Image (cartoon, rainbow, N blue to C red; front, side):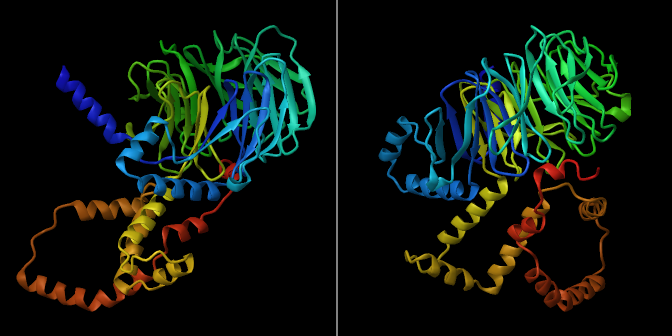
Length: 489
């Protein structure tokens, strides 16, 4: 038994990512709701005391702070590092949010506004597709629609019910607002916050999550709650479909690719992720299962939005796992907290992961940003001069790369970019041909091939120099987070 547990711990350690957070937000009350702005570096936080905060951050300044702080810590002696470890020293920015929070202008962290929005706790928050409006609902059963940049309330209404609301969602395509409550009822509102419909008993217990079926119909939505999944139309009074009883609580759901909506993933109470496909059985039952966290629950799931068949899963042990839904494999893990569950997952406007529990929120670095930092470190280590000149001197040194070094950097950048997404059919075919056993060649044929390779060598070298770097390719692919999800409509 001891050997088995040792092997398991080694396997878990091997999956742990070296990616670090850019920013950690702490609060003076438990965090109950979270939403990321679709097109700007803004996070909306809703607390147990009814306060809502809109926090703006500067990723570039936070990245510089992280790099400088990490370099200073690494330059210390072992004894000095041990002292910092005892103080729980972190090389990313930790920022406290409270009623008396002051802006950190050096790092570009700013409170756009803060307000006591609800009498009880804030239960759920969401933005519209453009991000210019924000919607909140509290335990006081009041819905408020407000301007996201000023916080000024545009409309509000009180739901005539003693049952608490658990979820609010704004349709990304139509003027429809959806709420789910603790007894499984769905209410539909227009932008004036007038109730237009109620669908009762969609689930036997609380509605835990809701997603829109934008690929199918603007009026159809999907929800999970208790031990079932349900599909319903906001214009009707009954659910269109209810899945088979899964005999396990369904806590979260989301599409691997929200624009296609072909593969749905659901987080379950027993630490697994279930895979669902409408084209196979119309969401009547799960098709496969991926084991993610034994003896834990999958409280939150979200797509990476990177067209890589991957999702992020937040579990009750404070770990975030990256899962390839197509292969059914856990690729990496990140530790959010050792004492709290990962109740919320979001993706910011530049596809950075945001994880949060009741005690704190973490904005994570992108893997690409980490790769760039590693490249800078490798370059500084291989520098011949070894002097500490100004930034201008560093630029001159960079321009002094030899042809071989440029070719090597181009190859590395190209490989890094190709790994960001799934290969096309032609690329997969080429890869299969390369991996398949090749027939033996005669000596004469080999000599002819070597001559051909020598003739083509200068051309391939020229092509290598013309390859774009990872950063250049990423700049060509810039897009808005909110638009990417629904660019096919």
